[in-house]
Amino acid sequence: MIQYNPKTWFSLIFDVYSRYVIKLLFPLLLFVGVFSLGLCFLVLTVFDYHFAGTIAFHSILGVILGLFLVLRTNTAYDRWWEGRKLWGQLVNDSRQMAIKIHAFLPKEAEEHREFFRRMIPNEAFSMKEHLRDSILVGEMDLIDEPIKQRVIKSKHRPNMINKLLMERVMQCHREGLVNDQQLFILDKEVKGFTDIIGACERIKSTPIPYSYSMFIKKFLFIYSLTLPVSFMWELHYWTVPVVMLAFYFLVSVELIAEEIEDPFGNDINDLPLNDLALKIKRNVSEILHT
Image (tube, rainbow, N blue to C red; front, side, top):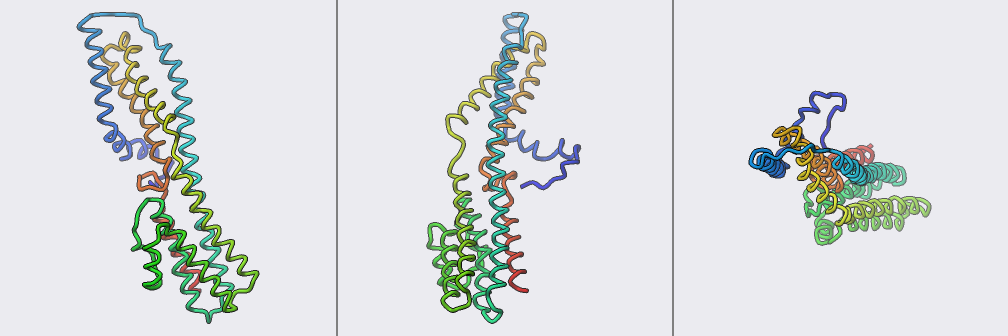
């Protein structure tokens, strides 16, 4: 995710992200520009046809298109923000579980404390890679080879990490290190991890409906291609840059919505999952080391 100062207007106006969007949209911008230029040339130069055009029709369509884009952007941002809240909850739940493990387990239970210190952050790393459809395990601090093999062979690694955490909690209970009430508390913490990954999977596996996304793109394209008809009579060949500029702003909004509707990827506006996972690792290590 891009870190920035919202008060620096000048740097935001000329930010490199704008150039990234222009580069991405350049083929479409070029097509719209060439189409507008060709239409103006045929109508104004070849046929020398002049007509007192009106922008009323496109003004009405523009209002409808604006409403669609607002709804589209709000829907995408809601998904992005819900993902951020879920990962904020993961940070807090990881801290809470580490604090409770530190309070419940005696200092003599060094093996168990070390297990939780190393395995709780693995929950975040496994979620991050699972949501990105990746198989990377090098970031995880796995205890030994048997545990490593269990994690590698599992098809759903966050579930396996939860399973390992719950197995160790039950082992501590059997050894008398955790009483019944403490077991109930820790069970809720592990369940919270499962709830978070389930909610993240719901966001990832339920994209914007195809028909809605398709209609928006068709509406944008048809609106932009017919826009020269409203302007060429008054602006003549200046219609070309005006239409290209309008197309740039309209399609950029749709492009941003596409980027943030899946907030767990590697796009530059996606959530900083790497940083959040590392924060969890630092926090848990600090809690269980003191």
